Every structure is written in C-alpha cells, then in structure tokens.
Length: 383
Figure (cartoon, rainbow, N blue to C red):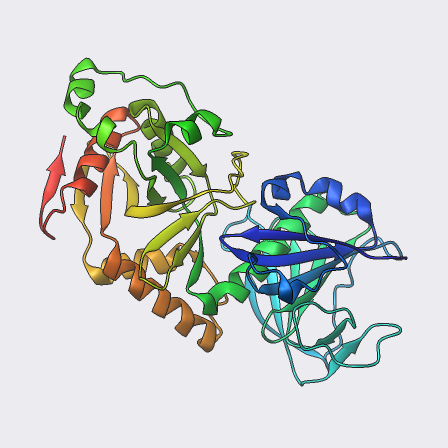
C-alpha cells in the first residue's frame, strides 16, 4: 500500500510523518497549524524557506496482534531504563541496541543515511516502549536509529488512544533530535504580552479584567509599553504546582496577554544568543496549539504559598530548575552535554526567578514587576 506523507514545522524545525493508513492523520488535528505544504515532485533540498528535514517517523498500526510483545530479542536490545515517576503518568521503557546491525524492511536493499528514508533501512539505536499509565500494558513501541533521524512507531491494534501514542512518540523523537540544535522541549506554561491581534486570535483565553481596582492602577503605564513585540514568560513547576492557574491570572490581569502553550513549549537559542519560545502541537490538557513565537523575557519557577513573594534565582538554581523541566534522554552523555550547553546560554541571557504565590491576579502583578525590575540577586518583592 502506498505511503502518505505530511510535513510539519515546529520552532522552525521541519519533520515528516508517513503512514500507509491515512486515517491516522485524521487524529492529528493538533498538528494542522504546523503543517507545511511541499510539492512531492520537488526536491526538498531545493526548497529555500524550509529548515533541514531533521527526522521522519513512519507510523504502523499492527493488525496482526492485539497487544505488543512483552519481551524483545535479547540479542538486539538491552533494557537500560524505565521511566514512570508517577503512578498515573505514562510508563516509558528504554532499550539500547547491543550492536550496529540494521532493520531491513521488505523490499529494501540499501542503507538510507538521511532523514528522508525512502529506502527505509534503520540502523538499530534505541527502542522505546510506552504504556499509558504505570501499570498498564504496552500500547506502542518506537524504534529509532542512533541519531534519531528516522524512526518507526508500531501501535497495538486494540490501543484505546492512538493519538496518545502518536503525540508521545513525536515528542520523544523531537526532543532527542533537536537537542544538538540549541533547542529545548520544556514542561512549562507560556504567556505572551504584546500584539493584541494575536491575543484576540488565541485559541484559549479567559475573560480579561482585574479583581482589584488598586491593582489596575498599579499596572497603568505598562500596557502601552508592552503592546509592541511579543514578550514571553515561562512558568515552571511540577505537575499540580499551578502553572496553568498562574497563566490564567496573567490573562485576567493584562488585556494584551495570551496563552502560547500550556504544557510543552519549545525554547531555542538563536545565533545572536536571543532566546525565543515557540508554541507546539503538544499542550497538555488545554488545547492551545499556536504556531507562533516570542522573545523570552523571564523564566519563573512557581511554588504555592499563602503570600506572593518573588526573588531572583542564582545561576546554579536557575540551571537546576530548567534542567529538571527539560525533556531529553539524560542518560545519554552526548545528549546531556548538548542540553547543558543550551541551558547555559539560556540562563546567561534570560533572568530567572522564583515566585511563591497565591492563585490571584496580584501574583501576576508581582511576577510581572519582578521580571521587569532587573533586580539584584537578593532583591525580593513581597505582597
């Protein structure tokens, strides 16, 4: 059966997804804002505006068995890690190839060295097997080559959430493949101030308006100043900390604020060391899939408290918080080195803070003023 292929560009990185089951693309509506039209008869290397194709993922629905095999050939892979930090979160089993043999698909004859694998030969590198929650059976597995430029996703025929498998696999492949490209896939909520047109067109927004008239007076003077270039603010924290709640407070406090992403934004360090944050097709529980970006003006670690207080983080603190909020195969030394280098550039160019806060709009004001103060390391704002 002929393969259908679609191209997507996230944070200016281009990748492809292909499958002989075209119905699978109907489950990928969250990728539509990032879709790129490329003439199939045109050599992709000659398309001047696109980024280099960084990876291709082939998706297969396994109709021959109802559940994925629970064991793999021990001659091919060795189990190196199982990631299931929380019982209700997905379980990811990581396997590494024992040798440099290749996976030959039927009809293939020659190795394929680029991310566009028309010959579909995959040098064994990694295997990721995923379950929807910690104690559930495996619902999909993805085999990748060493540099993550090609991969094959196989989904169990009786899987109850195929979109979960596609999203999870693409998030993994994207994070691993872009690590050498000064790119971080992060766990954060992102609010942007600026561009009222974008704010009105945002796919997710709460009603504007402040709960406290005195707070509104305090913010007067900042609105016009911030209506130019979009300025992004990232809120970090463990699940349940209140990242989405705090983002909503910004949307209520500032008329020009809009939500870029609620869970998995992409951060890039550009050649001039400017740090940008991009929306992505992955946004957690809030369906916010915006193909837009902004300059990063602040990174804020959140903690719940009975007061609103903010301080600047030291460089080691900022480094640790960002690393813990970044997706990557941290057991792989080379990938970790790439991540360390990117984070170093981020914290040298963006001020990072810790906000202990209540779930109110006053917290948004304290946060915004704190980021804008360019305060010294020991400066603290308290409300």
